[in-house]
Image 1 (cartoon, helix red, strand yellow):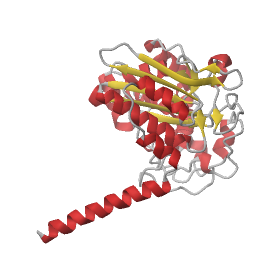
Image 2 (image 1 turned 90 degrees about the vertical axis):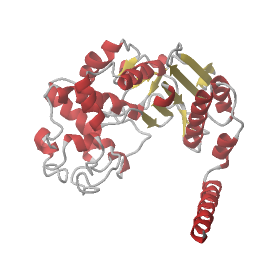
Image 3 (image 1 turned 120 degrees about the horizontal axis):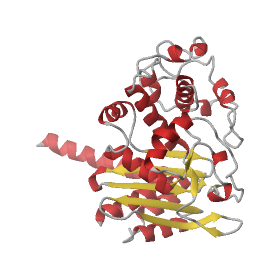
Length: 347
């Protein structure tokens, strides 16, 4: 009896500590978003997001048995005050990794690639330039278990400059010590997908972007998805902003594989639905994919934050684009997304 009482007291102390740490370390603007009364509809929540400091937001909801729903609030462009358009294109950043992982799964299943081949097997020129290149497998890179340093964390990398030279980004990690030994643990590294893109290009004999278009985008009828910003009509792309600044970050280009794609919320939603329900891949391809990567993702570039998730319990895909980063906007965006999911589950 005494032991149970002690355990109960410890749980209470832990709960108080958690609440206290949230109150101390979480900015009030984020807390205010979390604790506000939950509105009745997604539309109300999307409109309310603008009052919490976001310049523009787009939300796409695909619920099983219902027609897809589109929501938008705020502006597409601060200068012109053009309202946010749910059909706008958006830099989806690391959501691009889902497409590369899908392409890799297809090529592995067709025995064009092997998950057990090493980085040195596929790109021998990097043996001796990336530590453990002879032990790091394609599977480890796909799963962020390679230990290869993340180029965006290296001295000399600046998010607010153009990144149109893939070799320049790769140079930032060459001859650097590994973060950990291969497969020792997980640590997200954009360098993994930069290298996978290069492996796909070499293996195919043409760009992996072309393969993604022919084998993934075209079969799904996705005509509003582009591998690179330069392929899209600029007026169709939503502007992106850093919190409390008016400078438009739309033209800040980023061509590195795993972070370069531009798409509409609906196109991302259709892709994500197909990836999750098995209609995009064969059973064998799906088995490969399930062994190597996740089924949803977030993406971040200056001025652009995106969330794309499938919720099995309500058989619903939700894609959220927010055109403001910096300050406390990441926490606010995540809180808004969480509240949208709560509303959908309550319906």
